[in-house]
Structure formats: C-alpha cells, structure tokens
Length: 118
Image (cartoon, rainbow, N blue to C red; front, side, top):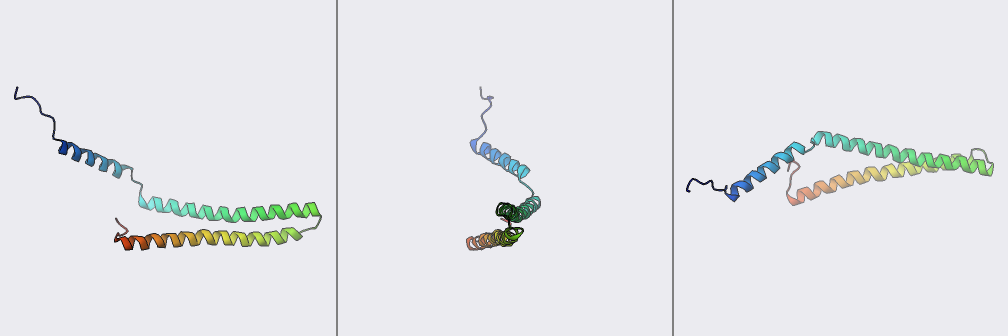
C-alpha cells in the first residue's frame, strides 16, 4: 500500500503550466520586423486612400455641378483646388497624429522607466 503513486505537487504543476504558456506565447508571437513593415504599409495605404478619396469626391462634384449648371470647367477647377487642399490637410492630420502618438508613447515609456526592448 505504500507503493501507491502520489499525485505531483501543485507547485510543480503550476510551474509546468507557466512554462507551457510561455512556449505557446513565443510560438505565436508575431515577428516585430514583419509587424513594423505591415504597419508601415497600412499607413501608406491609408494616406493614399485619403488623397484619392478627397480628389475623387471633389472632381465628381465639380463635373456634376458643371453639367447641371451648364458652366464648362468652372466648378471642376474650383472644387479640384479645394479637393487638393482637403487631401493635403487629411494627409497632414494622419501623419502628424502618427508622429505625435509615437512620441507620446516613447515619452510615457521613459517616464515609467521601461525601455523599448521590454
């Protein structure tokens, strides 16, 4: 009766579970280089869409107004210039928000005493 198997100690079980979770996290963690590159592509695509959308809407409205009112390229030119300004402002907002946000995160990490590698 003394040869019965005793269950493993709970602290051993907890350490094994923690080790298994760590291995799982390491296996599923994305590569930081790929993640940064994907983030850069996402920002570039967003900037391109912002520009194309602003210009596309302004050209469409300009052509539509010119056709409805019977004035040749008057509204097309006016709205195209306004669309270029709107595109520039949208791109500037996106770019400055990205820069200020990343600088803010870096300042908070320094304040908390964390480094980039942590």
